[in-house]
Amino acid sequence: MVAAGLLSATPPAVAETVLKIRPFGDLKQIDPVITSDYMVRNHGYMVYDTLFSLDEKLVAQPQMLELFTVSSDQLTYIFTLRGGLTFSNGQPVTAEDAVISLKRWWQRDGLGQQLASVSDSLTVKDEKSFELKLKRPWGLVIEALSKPSSNVPFIMPKAIAATPVDTAITDATGSGPFIMKKDEWVPGSKVVYVKNPSYKPRSEPASGLAGGKLAKVDRVEWHYIPDAQTALNALQAGEIDIFEEVPPDFLPTLAGNSDIKTMPQDTLGMQMVFRMNTTVPPFNNPKVRQAISYMIDQEKFARAYVSDPKLYKNCPSFYMCSSPYFTAAGWTKPDIEKAKKLIAESGYDGTPVVVLHATESGPTNTFSLVAEQLMRQIGLKVEPQAMDWGTLVGRRASKETVDKGGWSLFMSGPTGADMFEPVGHLGLRANCEKAWFGWPCDEQIEKLRNEFAFAADPEQKRKIAAELQLRAVEYVPYWPAAQLYLVRAVRGNVDGIVKGAVPVYWNITKK
Image 1 (cartoon, rainbow, N blue to C red):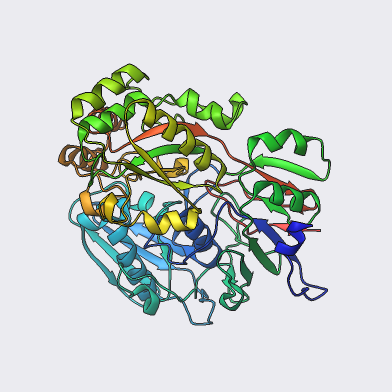
Image 2: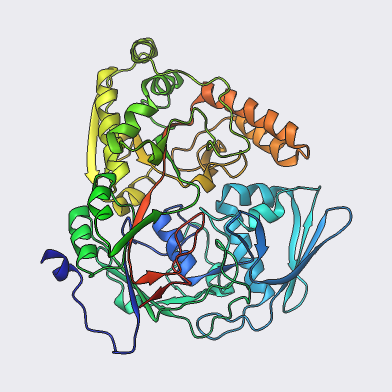
């Protein structure tokens, strides 16, 4: 069997419990701050812990903290770490580690950048306590520190966290429930984690990303299997235990297998995004970007990938449909003829649209194919470049023009946690060089994001979110292509999978 060859390895000790997972992609690097890649984020949850975490109800709970206090004027926060916390190398976790980790994180993350801009100081008080002083009250401090997805404020040893933010870390020493076995990491094949004997979990039950993170298996192996049919065969044969991002057309087959159960991969779903490089032709032209907003029919994109209406949603908003800030304000209706007209009016000169097309990720591949067909239909010259997801993650950092190896477009599927509200929204950030790949740059969007961050009244926040959407519809930093709900398949002898905003692998037992 092909899958057996892919998963061959030295047999573990008899008493060792090994959980084998087919993740959605390949792990190419291990720095969760320098990239927003979800494979690196998921690696981060294996080896690091956080100060706060969101529970199953998306409520922030202290994680590495024993307590925190806020002054009556809302300007001073004092955080105290739990006693007995150690890194995987046995060294104690200190307040200095936390401070340096946060200062590296907030240079890169959108919500972190906002926190940094309103902070007067972040300093160590003693071995276990540190203090954050704000210039003015800002109601999103805890939301920022409990951010569940890219980029997550993981706590690292100070020597590692001191690495310049534009230089990738290579040392995986962490504060979390597992240890990465770098000597067994083979990019394009396998990643191995073992239980961290130095980790001190919380006493509360696991809930979402919060509570006790108990490593109940001795070893976790991620096996990169790009071919979905090969992965399905491996799952059915018991050669892997969990299959992430099961293609929808496999679900009827799995429904008839009593040894396998299916479940949501996360609790919020994902927003498929058409992400354009706004810094180079042709998408540096606003009319070309506006044409895309009329070209995209979410129903057409979603049904190319999945037919079950329970697994997708047509959501006419930049915010997730489940977000309290959801609004359809100003949303354009699909109109291919209007899209063609805008391309004609734009002065488009035939510059090719270079598509970074990830072929092994089910929804990304399908949505890329649909996008390429529709772009040709409205008059754009399209140049797809096939690659795996890990290669795409590296390529999208290039700011070169397309004739010098740059790019125009990629399709991606950020988790709902990253597309929920204006400040932390991955796709709406328009702060130029500090924005997500594609680097949109718009003062009005940034002004509204800042106003949202300081608004205290919920109704005022909703009003600002709607105003921001109206501006984003005009500017078009990206365009949503549908909302999907991914499914993972799990062997029947695996139990304890946590329901959270992102997939994590503590608390799991295997019989």
